[in-house]
Image (cartoon, rainbow, N blue to C red):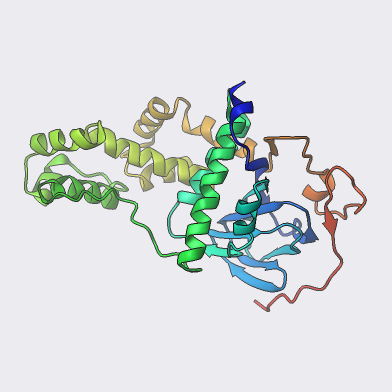
Length: 318
C-alpha cells in the first residue's frame, strides 16, 4: 500500500475540540507524548512546568513529553480548545522539537487551520487520511520550529495576497477593500468609485488571479466569516447574517446552502456535535473517560500512561 511506503517521522494520535466549563478544569498531569493545545475562545491561565502563562484566544501551548501541565480558566462561560496529541519518531526532528517554545500568541489563522484540517481528516477517515494527517502535523511542527527560531513573539503575517507587480496593485486594492468591507452590504458602484476603474475591467483582472468573479469572492469571504461565527461564537443566525453583510436571513440561508451544501442551522448542529468528540487517528490510543470528566486517573493505566499529579500550582490572582 502507498501508506506503507511513506516515511513516518510524525504520528498524529488523537485530536479533539473541547469546551471547558468551570466544572471541567484541566488538572496537573503529564504523559509520554507531545501535545498542542490551541485556545480558540476564552481566557485564563495555563501551567507548563515550571511557569504559569496567562492566555486568551489564539494562544498556543506546546507541551513536550512528560511535562507537567494544567489549565485554569477565568471566563464566565467556557474555554474552547483544539487539542492534539502526537509522537515524533525521527530522532533529529524530536531533538529540534524539544527546543520549540512552550507558548505562542498568534494573530493569523494558519496553525488553527492546520489543526482543523487534521481534525476533519480524522473524522472522515477517507483513503490516505493518516498520511495526510502526518504531513499536516509535520508542516505545523516546521512552522513552529521556524517561529521559535525567529522569535518567541509571533508578529502578524499578512493574510491578504501580495501582488508584487506595480500594474497589478489594482487587484490587491480590490481584495483589500473586500476584506475590509465584506461585513456590510455595498454596491459595485461604490467599489468603482473607490478604485477608480470600471467594474467590468477590474472583474476581468480579478478573475485572472483568483479564478472567480468579484461577486463570487465577496460571497466566499462572507460565508467563510459566517462559518467562523457559527462555530466559534454563541451568536444567533440572524445576527450572524447581519454581521457578514447579508441584507436578510433568507438570502443568507440560500447562499450559505449553495456554498457549503447544508443550511446554517444544519451546519450549527454539526459543529455542536463535534464539541468534545474524540477523533482517533492512529494506533490504539484511547482517552479515558476519567480524563474527559477531570477525575483522577489511575497512574497504573497501561494503555494510556497518563500521570495525574497532586501538586500545588502557583496560579496568579485574577
